[in-house]
Length: 477
Ligand code: UN1
Image 1 (cartoon, rainbow, N blue to C red):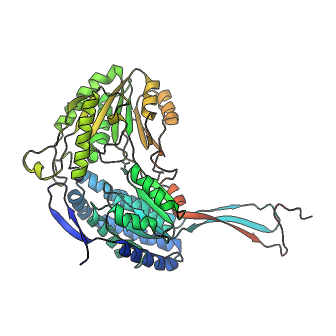
Image 2 (image 1 turned 90 degrees about the vertical axis):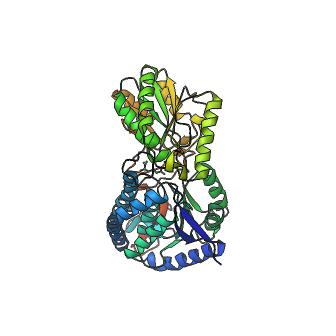
Image 3 (image 1 turned 120 degrees about the vertical axis):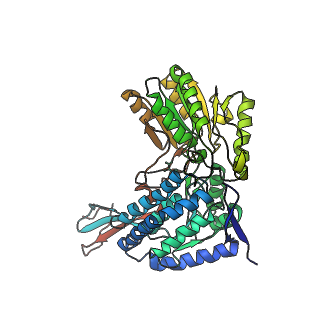
């Protein structure tokens, strides 16, 4: 009997479907099929590959409502955010479709007469893509759209919590005209299916979004085969609020980035660094807003916060509430699992705000991946910058201020891959590079033009039309 994986809703425990679970042999078969498909796919002209992505974007638009609904059930985020997740995939697919007619390289003069030099992008081969559950449609598109337009084939190992959405994603690629074999999907856990993919010698490149700890494991496993490894890992992103700012706007930004997707974004704002002059007022406004938020299933219109993904997640989030209290932070609101009525059937955590947080506390240093925001009071702008940077991650950052000088200093000095001025830490657009510094990654970026660098190798080509052997760097006269 083949093993299976059940998809259940974090909102109420409903069983949504069942998919086959891949063991090492199944992963090997998927890789073999993707490897066979590669020989033809890499020769399909890039504009034609792009046209398939264009059609895929159209298919996603057609399916947006159905995918949005499924996402509220399988992953749990609220309707508006689920629609946004699908929209990111639509945007990315249209964007990368256009790359089919660009994929620019360079031409440059030669040192020698009658010689032509250029560089072109070539695909890498079979891409192993390991994707998380928090953006179950958007993140597969961030990886697959550029990988495919560049001429790679893909084995996708989606998160075990959201297999049905990933399955739909791959089916729709087929509907858009992607030839059989070009994308393979394998379901399963990181320790089994994921590890088999990372170790497989015929997969020269792994792209992974997930935790810092797993990213390190992936890097180690991939090292023996000298694979390319592209990592998008955690964040401990801060919003700085200076004394000159529009406080209501800042609160809006904190609510959206701190509690949106129940805090389960790697770009989520889990720290707020506020100037002492506005700290008390900010604190009371934020608590008032948090306490008004309605928890519930994502598909209900008046839900503000959906469930978190599973039992392990809610236990981890709750353990940080205890850690925060033990460390001496002041719990202002939330800090508990919500169990009233039907909420008891799912994994709902109340939006949580800690005040009097010292920047060195664990709740201010470690990624919680839940609706928990820590408030840190500072005396001035320099201290705010120092604290914002004083973590091991470097994904997103934000500052609310009307002072243009400080805004420009923040743009320069915040150690992060993304900086927002007068907005929260979330909301990246697909045509700019996405990723972070320090332990958030390993120097690569996805999205934007930067994604092409992940999914291609540069090849330099020299064409000598002089009719004689010219030797670069050697005196020919
Ligand atoms: C993630 O949390 O892994 O900028 C990605 C944002 C989204 C993407 C987040 N567009 O918040």
